[in-house]
Amino acid sequence: MRVALFQPGIPQNVGAAIRLAACFGVGLDIIEPCSFPLDDKSLKRAALDYGPLAHMKRHDGWESFLAAPERAQGRLLLFTTRGAVAFHQFEFQTGDTLLFGNESRGAPEEVHAAAQGRLVIPLRPEARSMNLATTVSMALGEALRQTDGFFDLAAAAAAGAPPPP
Image (cartoon, one colour):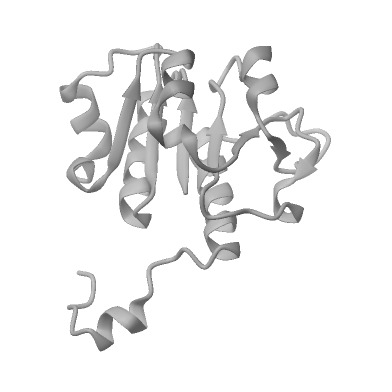
């Protein structure tokens, strides 16, 4: 399971996605250009101390992302307000990449065309959208629930691993 952010515009959302990916052990793809400098200093500030736990890859553009080895497996699923299927009614698979567009512009047509699925989080008609970090959290949580991808605390305890701090 992977999460991909297409040209993100808010550093705090990238930081939240880094922490989320680190905590759940999923890959994170950042598709540039971003609307802010994506340097080590800004990432460190946004991700707190979770950066070393994250499996993050930066791609210098859409074509680079599509050509990455990680794209060789699994489906590319775009979360969009123009989605055809409600995310909680969709059947996720372990190799899926959950893709999210830019906070203010969404995703361009070529991104929509490349997706094997376009999913939506149903909102009340009078609501325009949700925060990107919240959307990623909801989508990843549902995908991990369906694929039994959450960390197994019981198995870790049985193996003698210490509980999380």
